[in-house]
Figure 1 (tube, rainbow, N blue to C red):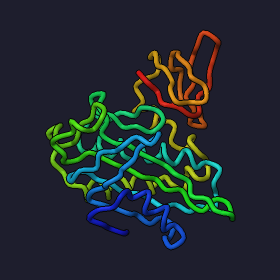
Figure 2: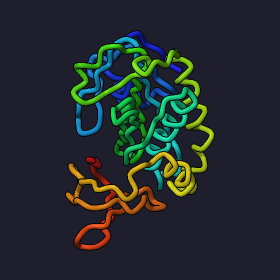
Figure 3: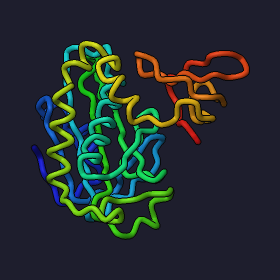
Length: 231
């Protein structure tokens, strides 16, 4: 495990130094000056949060996107053990009271040789009291009245993640689908999809064994593999 007081971002550090970093290395920073979320959104990285990246170099790469969903599930289940009523919003957001408490950014590192690594970056709001600059509705554990520390959360998330890591590498989303759906409260709800290859609106039917969102739309069933689910 590599620990820093401050980085531009743990993902950026991992990508710059990928060739020197061993498989399953964890990179942790107390603060980030240029934390990022999906779609290049800024991720506020003030003291009190947990900011880390996991560098993965598997030889089996058929189900890499599902590792992001495994990480989201691992965070959700960890927060539940701390009595936070966490839920999953497809594909990989973790919410409490309809406010974001965790963001996950996955980035593949490639070279002339092909795939080198998958970097999973995670930001969890733990002890921040002021999230007014987050740019979206956000909450932290301390604002929920839950007292804990970043190290405890980190260790529990990693334990959950690596307990099912090999199963997801071999079987994909189907290895965690039942558990994921247990924390996915949007079946039967009207949603819209933004920033995807297929902008769509419809009713959530389920999540497929591959981890795709299945919508019932006026045109019939629509399969969404990429996009933001908006309520």
